[in-house]
Structure formats: C-alpha cells, structure tokens
Length: 352
Ligand SMILES: [Zn+2]
Image (cartoon, rainbow, N blue to C red; front, side, top):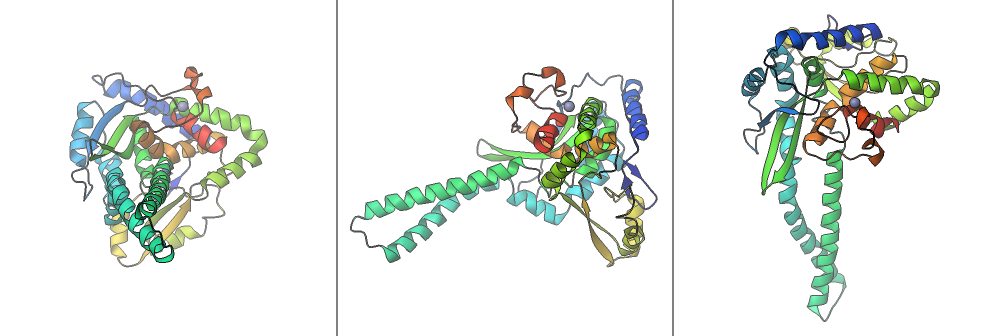
C-alpha cells in the first residue's frame, strides 16, 4: 500500500509490491544481528490487558520487549496506529462485552433468566399436578436455549470480527514491513479472562507468492472468483472518521479510479488537519473487496492484509479449523505453529 498526500492508501502496482518485498527481505539481515531465527506463526510478544473492565495495553512496554527481541519499530508504525485502532471508548466497551470472560459469566445468568421466563410462561397456561415434571421440562428447555445461544456466540468468535480485526488492518499494513502481525485474542483459563495483544512473527513473502499464483491460476474464471469475493466479503466495511474537506476532495474519484482508496490512516499530519476542522467530521465507509481491475499480486496482498488479524487471533487461540487435505501438504504450509497458514486460510475461507 502507498500513501498519497491526502493520507489515502492505494494498492500498489505489481512491480512496486515486488520492490517492497525485496526490501523487506534485505532489511533484517543488516539491522538485527541478534534477532533469533523466528519462524512464521511464532509469538514474539503477548501483552495482557491492564484491566478486564477497561481493556488497554501498555504499548511502550510492548515496544521495549519487541526491541529486546530485535524488532526496531518506529512509533509511527506501531503505537500511533494501535492507539487509533484500539484506544477508543466504544472499542473498549466492545472488547469487554465480547470477551470470553463475559460470555463465561453470561451463561449461568442466561440459564437462570431463561428458566424463570419459561417457568412463569408455562405455569400460566399449563396446570400440572406434578411440579417436578414441569421443573424438569423447564430445565431441559432452558439448557437447550442456553447451549444454542452460547454456541452462536462461540461460532461468531471464529468469524472475522468487524470491530477489532478490521480496525487492525491498518496496523498490520505497517507492521508487516517489520515481519510482524498483530491481533487481540482472549479466552477463559482457570475461570479468569485472558485478553492479550499478540505480536506474531510473519514473513508474508511466501504466502503472497502462493496466493498470487492461485489467483493467477483462477484468472480464466475471473468472474466466478469475483462473485465469490463479493459474496464472502460484502459485509466487510472499514469505517473511518475524517475531516469533511478531505472527503469532498477525494469523493470525486472514489468510484471511477482504478486506484480506489483502500484504507486511511490518521497519522500526525492528518490529525493536525482534522483538529482544524473540529466538529466537521465525516464518517466514510470503505468496502474491502479487492477491485477486479487490480493485478493478482495486489489483490493477494489486499486479501492477506484484510484477514491478517482474524487469522492471528484464531492461530494464537488454537481455534483454526480447516480441511484435513491441507495437513497432508506440509510443503505448502508457511506456518510453523498451525496446520493452516494465512494464504491457506484465505483460500479455504474465501476462494473455495
Ligand atoms: Zn501461506
């Protein structure tokens, strides 16, 4: 991705992506002599949230730990975009109410509420001589309903999360240059919540070439692929808040241009400009479906970035599910810690 003067990201042309990857390959060898040999999927830093009721992460400590492991990341590539993505009151509220611990507490409460509701409803309409029959049937109905609701919540946790994973795309676009991907994952362990910010090592080059190859192979069924992408990704929308003046200028070429804006990033320059137009903020929605006119490599890069945070979250919480035939092809798996790598996850999830 490239940023122009107005702070809008464009998907790079094929040769530019090549240049970027070559540079990314060359950088670590000269810069980090003491960086151990990391392999894809290895967790570099896991930072627990400071509190369960007000989830936030100590980003300066993260940075110090990453530096200690040989990852020199400028603040503009890590702290600033992470703060923009996660340090918002509505996002924090979402993290609390969508956390595994909250679901864990919710289950017994839901059971009791359902039991009372079903019991009082049935008691009104049915006159039963044996109370234990009524209680037993009410308990069975409540158990069934509670299990169904918890199952739906658990299943939705496996899907891409609009409020967190999508917000982290912009952070991962920057961190992938340093061979890192970030995600927020949480689960319940010993009756306590375990919400953490995960930094996972990921060299995207092999996944990028494999996914590009797949997209090129499918180029003769271009329409079919595009329909699949539209069907699976139509709900993925990146919502950004921008100053009104900027959006008016950009609005003219949004639909016509081949280089459709993908993502925006609130860097220092942009924040200055938006503070000048305080109160005149405009919410803009960006569709994340790759443009049909883009070259295969740019499409692959966009798909990898879109699903990066969702994939890392599932990888670290060991909830990746996939067909067994991928397990039989370890050569194609670019991840050392999971049975599916990022490109296989996308092929399995979107292109199948
Ligand atoms: Zn891969």
